[in-house]
Amino acid sequence: MSELKAFTSANHPTRRWRKIKDRLIETVLLLAACSSVFVTLGIVYILVSESLPFFETVSFKEFLTGREWTPMFAEAKFGIRPLVAGTFMATFIAVCVAIPLGTIVSAYLSEYLKPRAREALKPILELLAAVPSVVYGYFALLFVTPMLQKIMPNLGGFSVLSAGIVMGIMIIPYVSSLSEDAMRSVPAHLREASAALGSTKFQTTLRVVIPSAFSGISSAYVLGISRALGETMVVAIAAGMQPNLTLDPSEPAATITAFIVQVSLGDLPHGSIGYQSIYVAGLTLLVLTLIFNILGMWIKSQIQEKE
Amino acid sequence: MFQAQASRLTKESMGEVDIARNLKWRRMKNFMFSVVGLLTLLFAICTLLALFIDLALTGVPRISAEFFTSFPSRFPEKAGILSAWVGSLAVMVVTAFVAIPIGVAAGIYLEEYAPKNFFTKIIELNIINLAGVPSITFGLMALGLFVYKLKFGQSILTAGMTLGLLVLPIVIVTTREAIRTIPNSIREASYGLGASHWQTIQHHVLPYSSGGILTGVIISLSRAIGETAPLITIGALTFIAFLPTAPVSEVFPYVSFQWLSDAFTVMPIQMFNWVSRPQKEFHVNAAATGTVLLIMTLLMNGVAIFIRYRFRRRMKW
Image (cartoon, rainbow over all chains, first blue to last red; front, side):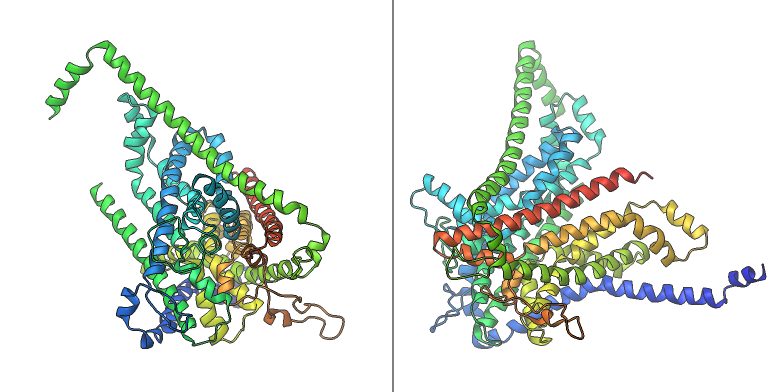
């Protein structure tokens, strides 16, 4: 009995040890939680510090306004525009596929299907996002491109169009999953009110559910766009790797990511201009992604303010 | 304005015929949307099927025992994926060792310990943003940091750490979700019996949420196994005709970690290499590799869905 009493007192060695152990464990866990911050800082630091030497040889003006990107040639040209144009074009096509299809699918899943059917179909749909992107690249090059060539006989073996379409299908689940969550969290009384006024389900979905869920739906769009901007293997395989300043989606073109892959496949001496150029390209990609995310957050805050 | 609308309503729709026509048209649109929705959903699922069938039709005839036990070769009919699947396996081991402890620990901290303050908010925002960072930038970071600054070389260790950091947000987020489903009454009961904070986590929170955590771990590994771009960036080779050093040997000290610093290739890179060659015969090899890769990914996802389903049924608080 006296032992138990001693144990319950705050200064008993067992208790003190337990407290120290708890504190220690908490510190370790805190460090683990901070690791993600370290990773972000690491990415930013490495990308910036490895690309800075690039601007000692190339002027910032040439980088932004040049119309050719040929860093590996003997007569190297460093204008980022062809790569940015390729990235935007591929992303635009992907978004044109993913946003309409993803929104329709999410509205259908959330408003029209019974819970059981929804629970069964959602995991299958999400498998679309689980397929490795290199497999999508194969699919784009050897299935979708030949199919498109039947409709458009002039289409070459590599095209931004087919890469973009496949990329769009690939990101449907990213768009549909988050949008569906947003639509389902719209309170039922709004739907009931709309139905009581005589709306059909379609009218309720279009005029009540989608507008009230739009802040969540817009985050889904932003996530989809970020995915498309950073997607690598599909474009590297199916869109060709030649930097090409064009607005014609049936031509081959390189995106920022495809360029990084192409250069990395070769032998790359540390500190060479080729090495620096992939970091500059990577930094550009990161900045573009960041701009889109900030834009998305701004749009979201505007919508929320209105409400 | 309301009056104007009301008067329009009385003028236009008071006739019964008009109401009927309006209703019919609206019901029609509703029906059309349900058809469009179903078709869109079917389109997405059929694309998945087409991809799988196309890959399997081309690839499956190529899959044989020799395909798994041969090295890549200049001759497409002799080439195999031995170095690729061994490489994938080795990289996955390192990835798991990096992502699971850090991810689960971070998840526990954020759910069980973190105070609600500015600092915690920063960490949470950071994790969300990290999940949206293009995977190739992780490769660039690893090339600069692990390969050149820390001198790990273009090795299995570098690759595993890169993928580990890449999937870290997935592990953290799923761990948090799993822990969040445990009701507070369990924690209070444990405290009531005199357990400390960590004892509560160790004996109650973690075991009860292990199903959800496991689901997250499997999903993150299935993501990592198909990841190609960051590994190409750190300089993984596309043609490797040797295996990493065996981790166990018959002579002292029996266990060797030499394999961590060996060069490697992985299945998606092997597939990329084959698909980017012009010869049709290599495309068949690519399809076979893709089939193996796809089956592994789908299996891992299937297991994850199954575990989630089982745990959801068993746990009734």
